[in-house]
Image: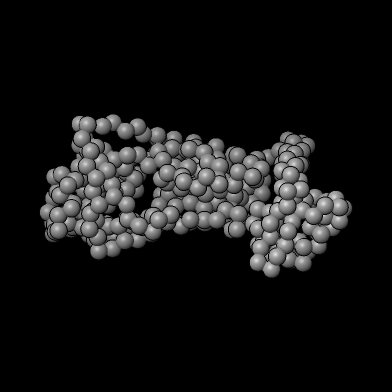
Length: 307
């Protein structure tokens, strides 16, 4: 029995709650993972996991052992990367999931510079606005906008996005130019709804001016759950958009979108980089997080709300 492989297999079973899922993330067979855990239990003479036909639970002894295993695996990773200057270079595969507009407009165009700095890191980039299960899908980190309500994740705040309200000239020609946010509640106006992955609902928006606040829900004929589709719907004249200014900037400059209510302000959208708290923050993940923070500071610096 390779004790390192056995400890790694045990840790992944605890994290995923399944021998099958653990095997998938480790690129091993379920039989191999099962045998490694059984051999580990035999060596320790302790039952680490309670198995039923439906689920796997960690025992009290297993939970205590799991915490020590995490530290051992982290120490081993640090030891391997510190043997020489060559091996200390960030390397390996990094699995990241990011929102589609952030990927297409900011992250992907900047990747040549990241690859030039860290040529030994291979990125597997998932592009979506859905909720990703980091453990089940073996994802190292996700970048998400909005309040982070999942307390099971560790998170690093990497920036805040300035928000604005926009509409296409074709829409305004048909519905009229609103001068106050409240007018968007009128029957002849429409918004494009964005379905937040956590709630699958379209949230109301609050705007501020001179100490006064107004909340607008709006009516919609279309609601989508993808940022790029949301922008495309607004450009097509389907309704008013509430979105980060960086997404609208080029379209405003070309005249494809009109910036509305410029004397009103929206709450900035916080951006977080989240990762499993029980995973060791490897060198490759650490340098990626630092790079993302630098990228955010360059393209979408932190904004503060002025009411």
